[in-house]
Length: 398
Image (cartoon, rainbow, N blue to C red):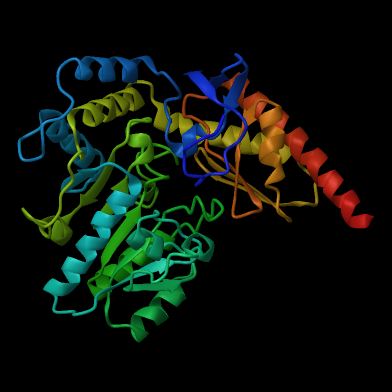
């Protein structure tokens, strides 16, 4: 059968019909352990009863009005998010890329109000912020930018986890008005910076009167063992973007702002037809409620430690393992050579994983994963990695 879908993804040969918690079930009733969560989206797993109930209840009442009217669920969600984050207000949209677009516009408006004609935003190498033209331009990956020039101007790039490079860039470019950074780089290879990296960026932003803007689209909503990853550092940014797990599969994005950044956008400056609609906000409210009721954020720390400890034990002595790292349930196993083949190998073993930055196996299991599933994940993937690295070594020798 011919597909009329644009071939923007190299899709794996499986179609899922339904989900149950940490499991996805295909059209032939085969069960797969989902260690990817739709790329950090389904933190509560699949078909969670509270999310199902919230969506059904809201769909019976109202799906859409417009942001020219008040939306009760949106206001309630904004209250919850600002309470949990320490931020002042929220702009709702439909995706992470849109949330980052709002952040970029905030930074530019901030610059213009300070009299800077061509404001620039500092961004990082190996970063990922989205696929719209502006967020693509902010992204630190030349492969995803290829073919889309001319890119949007106004971004100054430095290496990730390098505070000295930030200082040098600030000395050389007086147009920089903001720093946009991921607390942990996901697409870039699950890169975890030094423990004080965000604190030092916060200090530099304060010193130079810059906006500190954190892309928490992948790290947020409990993924790293705090509601937001910056809370590990006891700081508060000026802007924070969210999406992915906020709706557990229902599209929603949010750009949170604080202090001077919270006053920049006014009526007519920005908008979204569907952003913050009753359905998406009702789903997000249910997500926040479940996270609290089931204590899932604290469990993410413990489960992440258990998974990494399991891999360290099983893969001890494997010379092809460069590093095993994690921040809560954001886990990377870096090999010394490209390992994309492992995605298909894992699929054959009914395990869903991802390889990013060519050499890093990325695991983003749902926060509801249990002990038996953790053991299955560690056992299955450790065996696959061991077999793969042995085969790769043999090919190299021959």
